Image (cartoon, rainbow, N blue to C red; front, side):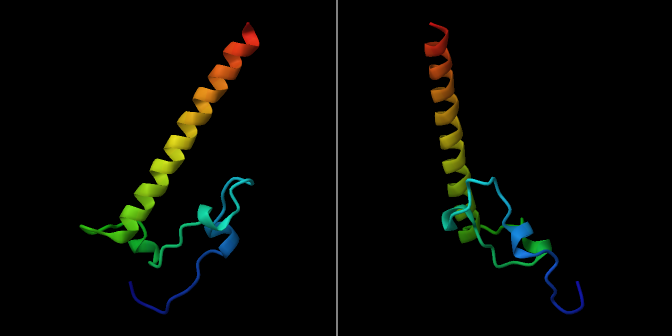
Length: 77
C-alpha cells in the first residue's frame, strides 16, 4: 500500500466489546496496520498473546455454560 498512514476507525470502534468487558485486560492492542493485523509469523509474540486470550475466553465460556446448565438442572428439581 502506498500513501500516508491514517486512522481508519476511532478507538471506541477499534476496542468495542461487550459492555462488561471494559477493563484494560479486555483490550489487546496490536501495533500493526490493517493489512497486517491478522498475518502472523513463526514465533510471533502477538500470535501467542492472542492465542492466550482466546483460550481464556474459551475457558470462561465453558465454565459459564457448565454453571448455567448446573443452575438450570437445580431449578428444574
